Length: 519
Image (cartoon, rainbow, N blue to C red; front, side, top):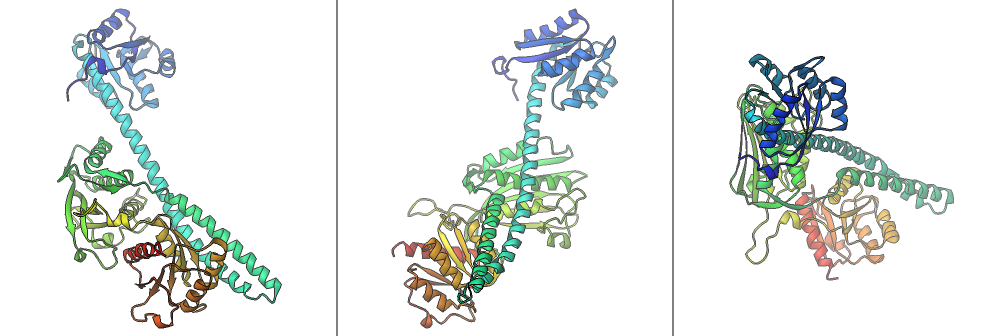
């Protein structure tokens, strides 16, 4: 890497520890001769040194080895207690080889002999660059730790919200049932109180869940920028006995996603790989553009057939057995003494939120490879580039979800919320009608056809009586489809098989909402 020009180096503050004015001037003349602009503070005892650290705030320290009553080793010790990165360069006539090695081990940046000061200026320039790089890396690592802690909090909040929602749903159902007893005013009032308390509780849970998830930030992610950021973050974290190789088959490739989250995911995997190679090895990160068909995906995976970006993180470390692989994505499961068991869970959440899937290939003694498959924008010859994953996103449409079973209702509401809709939960037809009376007609109704307390047929008829004329999606078992002849006439009625596949439901919702625009 070529040296920076004189104009590129800003004016610096030099704290000089020296008891000889003549030696101090000779040292500083080397900086002047190289065109380095500086302000200097000269000290020769401990109290003045400590004061200068706090008040002068130097960019670099040049120190003699020994002085009456004070020493360079003591100055270095005091500095490193406060600052791990500030450059400290010994400039001494008595520094032997062993002393020089000890100084570097104790945190010195470099050493220069007074009788051969020619490389002082270049040593200062290099030390300034390295110090800035170290500060940048520490800031990046601190930000990553903060993000990981927040990610852990978000997962805990999400799980707590899910459980609370399941407990509150029966309160709504009980309150609505009690309100049916209008002949007894006391029961009716009690039902309204229970229902209102449950509703306020659900709203608080939803607010907590929304905060924990954070805002969705879509942007165009470029592969070369992603790998460059990863290389920077890994500086200083890769031991000398591990070789790092980053390769992309198309550096200019870009796709819709979240750069920060993907960067966090790759860094987590790389740090895990480094820890899996205590004796050294090879860490390789590579990207490949490929087409994936339906046969690639498992039955429990939501998929979109098409072009994908595969991000692979491979190591030659200790590997994992089948038992460890089976528990990889369980929260708090870890094989490391200091691990939290949340890193891979976080990675899986990030990739899933991008519409992708994670795969792992590992065996004891043969290393580990994580493959991250992210959907790319499809090229449409008849129009602009479109992405099916992006096309399935909601636009804050209000969706009324009517399902009796509390766990299924909660799960579906969480899913629709994550995809950008405004879902509203109702555990019965009565609750659905009350919601419409209070909030108006929704953009779409998604309803279970297998309800008992207030059947799907009765609920749909009641919704129509209350002015609902838009599309309806019925969730039904293939082996027990609803009798459409008994259903009220709905112009746009759609069926989605249970158990529900997320992408199937989302595609049907987009069709239903599009059809409702014409009504």
